Amino acid sequence: MSNIETNIEEKLNIALIGAPNSGKTTLYNWLTGSNFKTVNYPGATVEYSVGAVRSNLGSGLQFLDTPGTYSLHPKSADEEVTLRALYENDRVGEISGLVVVVDGTQLSRHLLLARQVQETGFPFILVVTMADLLRREHIHFSPEVLKKEFGALEVIYFDGVLGGGLKEIIGKSHQLKRTGAPLKPKIWTAEKHENELSEIEKKLIQWGISGKSEDQKLKKVFAFTEILDRWLLHPVGGLLIFFCIMSLLFFSIYWMAQPFMDSIDAAFSFAAETVLKLAPGQLWSEFIAEGLVKSFAAVLIFVPQIFILFFGIGLLEASGYLARAATLIDRPLSVVGLSGRSFVPLLSGFACAVPALIATRNIASKRDRFITQMIIPLMTCSARLPVYALLIGFLFPGDALAAGFTLAALYFTSLLIGGIAAGIINRILKKEKSNFFMLELPLYRRPRLRIILVQSWHRTKSYIKRAGPVIFVIAVVMWLGTNFPYQPDASLRIENSYAAQLGKVIEPVFVPMGIDWRVGFGLLSAFAAREVFVSSMAVILHVSNADEDTLSESLIHEMQTAQFPNGQKIFTLSSVLGLMVFFMIALQCMSTVATMHRESGQWRLAVMQLVLLNVLAYALSVGLVQGLRAIGVA
Image 1 (spheres, rainbow, N blue to C red):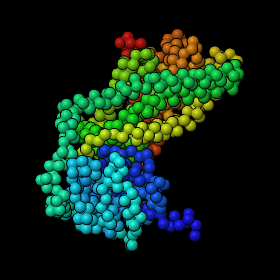
Image 2 (cartoon, rainbow, N blue to C red):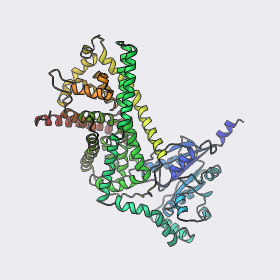
Image 3 (spheres, rainbow, N blue to C red):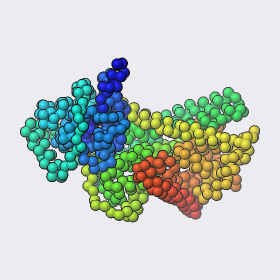
């Protein structure tokens, strides 16, 4: 038998399970070398991840990082995913054993999960995390007592900072081999749950793991966290700090990214000029330079801003602050019928609506989950960022402070509109019995910058891969549409093009928004992907590098000079604000529609959301533009 066949036969599937914030995903990253993020709030991981053990640590093991769960008796959709991963795993096959991860500073509550695993008969290792904190405060206890009490194959301390205990975990994982089918978890009554918790707490005291002396030591572990929480969780001051932190994040998206954006813009400008010089006046060189290079440049120039957004959210996640933010925002959200559990999906919506909709599985209440799903598309996703940056750059050229303030205002306005929409839906839907929002707050930890940088880059790269093919296809279509039937005179070419012929037919729909057929054509192209609007404008306005301007400057210059046939400017304060309102509310992402269908199980709801948001966006945009013009604002 070959070595390859032997490895396949001996491969063991080991599932990692544990409560949210227990350190489970950190352990998974160490075991597999994966670049998955460590999150400090429940509900962020709604699918289980799979990865083979790192080659430098061994072979024959495959680990599953299941969604965080407090119990084997699921109360939310992501906890159900964990249970199915253990018993109905068609993706990777039979689970050989478990690694139960418990936080060493929260033993009594986390060991309840170990007790439930013990009842199933799964062979398991008990891994105690936060070992670095316990060691620092000289908190020691014999693993043997836990091993005997819970029937674990081994109890191992794990240091998530340095990776201490990793080799022992891998060594013992090879011994996790089932001898029979595991039992289904027994359903615990509330009384059984309380009795088990009380019994575990008594035994921890008996074993010297808990008690006055140990509790005093643990207080030192939590001391720094408690000091910070006095400020960050203050009902008034905490909200002000939250507002400042989020504002700083949105401001940094603009001013920190500017030098990198300028460099990318200059590089693409040089590339476009070089291509044009290779064959002046040739159709193929114009296509490459103006149709492709400038289209990609119009979107990729905003990649630094998207990276900074992902990096900022990653810092807040890794530090432990986002769990506090969810707690703080619980009361304001309750006014519109939501809870702090909706905060995580809503914040995810600022990156992309698709994973945000999936993250709603964590919300136990069907009513709250539906409201959250309905307003997620209103959050300012990363695809809107290139559009906003272009329109803000038009309004405030060279003024980073005003631009940053406007961008922050757009983000907070989207939250306000989402809140209003949630309040309306809350009044329409039938009330449910109130649910308490409970969240275990993790310790504040120093973020590992290297990991966050890698994670942010992977997210950004994923964005580029998703947007790239769409940009390419739309750029080709737009260039062909605006350059054919071909005429040597470039000034007449676009006026007689196929795009112009089609655009002028639909122009009456867009005139009330203060825009002509060209901008309207760009709006329609944005339904393939929002960010395509920018590249479409670059193509349809025939952006050139006149007067040594960069592509970005040239595009804004073309917008400043674009006119209706009667000489009236197209891009004015009112029309640009109208475009901002349209992009803020319109649902232009078909992936979001498909995900809404999958998560809700109904096409009716997905189509209703699509129609409602786009009709509302158009009506509000027209109302704003016409209202501003009625009072004399051009």
